[in-house]
Length: 281
Ligand SMILES: Nc1ncnc2c1ncn2[C@@H]1O[C@H](COP(=O)(O)OP(=O)(O)O)[C@@H](O)[C@H]1O
Ligand SMILES: [Mg+2]
Image (tube, rainbow, N blue to C red; front, side, top):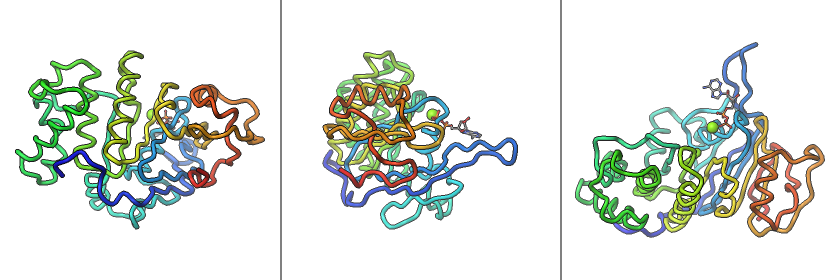
């Protein structure tokens, strides 16, 4: 684990089928996911866009085994994350997945290199080796010379690069990012998205990134739009235009943004909400 090469054995996709999630009960119930199926192939990058409250974070958390869906399955390397014990899910998350959140997730008292090395050290990698791998990732992400800075001594964009390094040090199969540029100005955010997608690609991992930034679609192989807990559209980089599904005659804002960012796509794909995605590439 001392190089930046592709993660080993990333040959199996992450497959979510028929995910529903209901928060609360009876009259307080919120149907955050209403039947979402999504396949993330090894090494591919998927942007998830949609209005606030459309279920993006809930979907990401179900895909990553952070929460259990109300129904449906998430299969990863021969296991169904929805039926595993909390302990097994936690172990699997640490071993196979990397995470980048909006901000504030670095430990303020630790230098950048130790923040980035943390997942390896938690997994038992000796400190010297862990910090060496972390330093290589920091350098790869343009932070050479800043290894000893604490988060308070970094700009927002630099801090997110440390978070990206931390997500990648363990050679994950999938990196999940939830609005990783939400706290950054637009120019810095665009830069961080480009660094994130490039670095994840270099690592060989797949990427699932939730974002409001329409520009992200330019860096991803696929954009999935959500609305009311359902997939409302799907766009592939460079794919020919496909017919709009009859139930979405007027694209919502996120769909229009995704269409604009993937100019080869004239309209949402014909995929119906609830169907499996990702097999049509
Ligand atoms: N822990 C929770 N308890 C109750 N309702 C929740 C919880 N998390 C999210 N929700 C609700 O589920 C819906 C989807 O939320 P979320 O997945 O966070 O959407 P998004 O990330 O697209 O903004 C929203 O209506 C939200 O209020
Ligand atoms: Mg969210």
